Amino acid sequence: MLASRAARASLFHLPPPLRVATYHQSRAFSASAPRNFTLVDIAVAGPSALVDSLHNTGLPWYATLPTAAVLVRGVLVYYLSALPARRAARVQANLVPLASARTLHKLNDANAQARLQKLPPSLRPLSRMIRGYWFRSLELHKLGKLFGAPRFHPRGILNFGMLIAFTEAIRIKCGSREGLLPLVLSPFEWVAMQTMPGQFPTVAPPEPSGLGEEQLQAATTVSEDGMTSIDLSQLRVAQPGHAHSAHLDPTLTDEGLFWCLDLTAPDPTFLLPTLLSLTMAANIIFRPTAGKPKASSPAAATPRALTTSEEQIASPEARKILQAPPAQGILSRYIGPMNFGQRIGLCISIVFFFAALKMPAAILLYFIPSMIMGGLQRMWLDRKVPITPPIQPCRRPLRFKVRKEWVD
Image 1 (tube, helix red, strand yellow):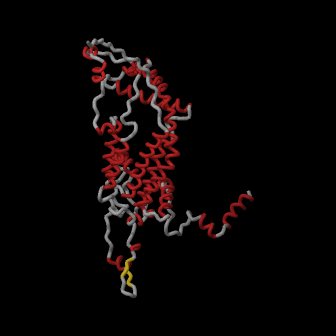
Image 2 (image 1 turned 180 degrees about the vertical axis):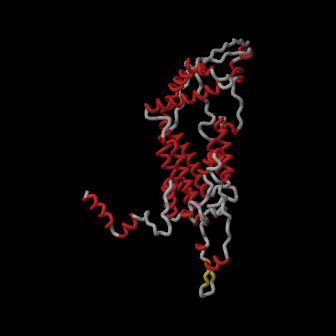
Image 3 (image 1 turned 30 degrees about the vertical axis):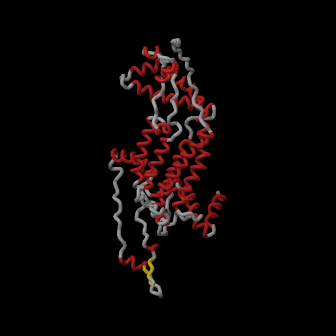
């Protein structure tokens, strides 16, 4: 007991600098309370440090942000997420036939058929499709864990998490309320405001106040030679009550592009939002999976029956012409047929164009190079680590009746 009291008393005999730093949080005489760190501050600490380090090397902001995007997407995300995910996808491609067979067995089970019959006839195909996708994903995950390639892994969200963290760090530096995370959370905020209107009061934005005459006179100095100078640091006053006013970086307002010098404001020429939408559309349209044939089901392994009499009596040359695929245009040769998911992605790229009109140009300067690097990274992986197509069911050879012809 006496030893513990002596140890406790010895803590108060620290040197004055250490004692002040230790009990800084409990001081009552401080005019400004110490700032509490939130979860957002912790999440953006690393991205802010990386961006500031690149900017301290002498690069302007219009070159710092794309460089940070290339380094993060090309090095960090590639070795921690993209490359391991591609290797796992190669293993999962060999497990697709077994997972499909197990899924078909579960869907054709007697209990599953009995539950399916309880639904209305119009909802049965949709229910079977959803249950089939769910069972197939679970089977691929179980089989993948046995071979060290699970389908669901935390590395799958690393790319999106890094993108959110860096865009939030840039948004805080710009002092803007428009960013990628507010855009993602806006539907949930709207639902919360509709369900609980009293819990989320709307706050009107502060009205811009002009510079007073007294403030200009205080910042103006006249030298002995008669030269008048104004101290701009006294005029740049942060908005009161702003959550991130301490993180505002004034150098972002004069180190932008020649058509958009202020990176804290949206692009007035709409060039960056247009480039963002075109980049998203290009990554969707020119995806290597576009235009590839889908995996055939076991039911498609049976030969197609000849129905019309013209096909039965036609010669082999005429039959090749009849069975030839329709001619494709110049654009469809390079793009290929698009599925439903790619059409939805094109619609999302149009929505992002209108959302980017309100975002600061600094966020777009990071977002666009990151997406371009992601597309190039996907092309590199398709070339160096290709995914083998799943094993297809065997097809029985087709038999045609050949009519003999004699020529004199």
